[in-house]
Figure 1: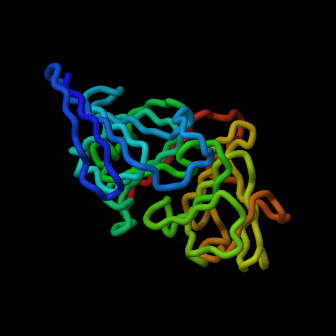
Figure 2: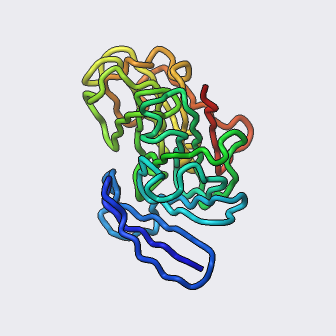
Figure 3: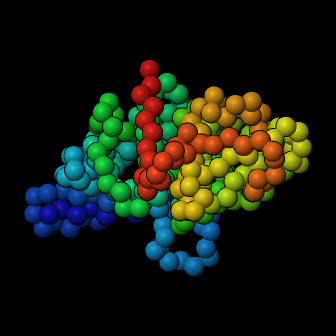
Length: 258
């Protein structure tokens, strides 16, 4: 077995340490966190991580990600992912930089607690970048994650607490709500104007709620200026993956693209 352990800073070249023991290659990726941790303790027990493989059913070479990867080319894993095991909430994209330069490209999102699955039909050997959403060390913590394009593509803005003025004002076109709490979104700054509450898919278990399109956001698409944790509005919008009969511990979505 050949084990390659990668340690790198964001946008830095990976430093590889190779231990040769046989003929099978396994590649593990480790990077520094981009988002602040919820807990000050350094324990990694609750960290989000993703194991992806170049064969179905977790076979072949492995890539372990614990951070954003804007290009899989540098890790010899571009267009190779066929199956993955998810701990946390992860988004995979067919283009580099999270489809920032091609919002018509495909992407796939999935969450779970060591949940393993093959990629959807039509996405096999297509992933070129990936990232998590929510807090890096607590995927069931309360966070609000806003994306500047539909299907969670391109630029993003996130918060763990009330935010009286968005940095990307009136630009969010899709969102992901994590944790157990609703969030109230407002058209005006400082929590003024028309409002709507958005929710996780399961407030008991802390499963995330996905609002992948402008249609799912309704009138708040490209009008969100402020947000606060909790529901303080008479109007609510449930996420696309809100359970109708039974709550599932793992939910995925796939945007096929053009």
